[in-house]
Image 1: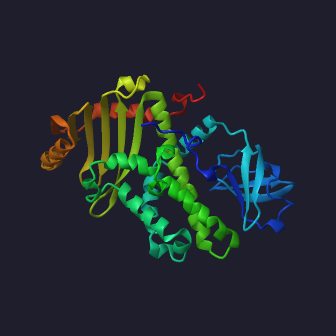
Image 2: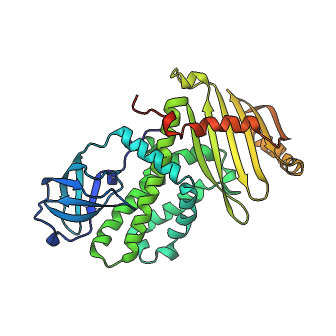
Image 3: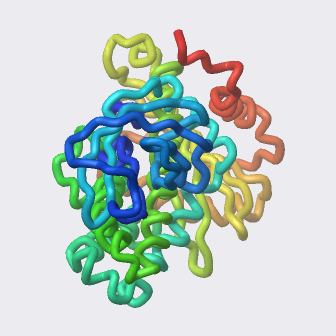
Length: 364
């Protein structure tokens, strides 16, 4: 599995500046013309102030632009809104990755919040007349993708849930053929359909939804970036998967570490360690350690309370049957009580250390 950094697997809107003012209120511009734009203020909430032909204008952009930076832009269109494409800039891949990393560190629960909000925002009832502009097929696909990305009693029926999650989320965006079933690509497509509506100013809801989509794409990019860094530096991955409980939603952080053969660049090894850190309102913290070697699996679940351990143990038989049905031989599958989980905390801290700026030198 190869996760690419966001700029390599970039979406089209990453290199656009979109101006809400009408062309007649801007300095003279012509389609195809290349002009210089100076960044007057660092972007905030997806908006940045630029100096264009001695005129200050506000533009929408998801790029991590910096105050004082000068970029060359090509005028792509003037009506219904002005769209500029950056054709040369000083933003490096390293800078992009570091900005994504900073965003993740400052918003560690952004992905969970996205799922909570997206379920409501993309329902036909809440979209109202925007649903027709976005396209009924796109809205239906969005509902389907969001539902399939949440681990629930229904998605549990899919034995390949985690594989599908990685593909549909957008981690492997350059390798996905069916873009209609890819969260990142679908958000980009919807954003494109909203731009003409924003230009008219007749639908305030369109601008609000476009803002949500911009922040959502930034969240996806940040998760893609940290996994690219994990993968490149230590052969590890960290995925956040939303969990649907009977009365509420939770979040699971899943840490994956491949064997030495993979981390040394000699191809995918036949041994992987998978660490699940689950935090549940009723059951509390549960740690799952799984070791997979070829088609043999060993798994231990650790709980803080003996009663919870006994409860979880009731489902181990069913779990074993499903693993066997997938072709795995079970070495051992057990649940134990471990109040401290010191070893687990030490192992998970290896992943957390990668978030420390001083421990990542992506300039090398």
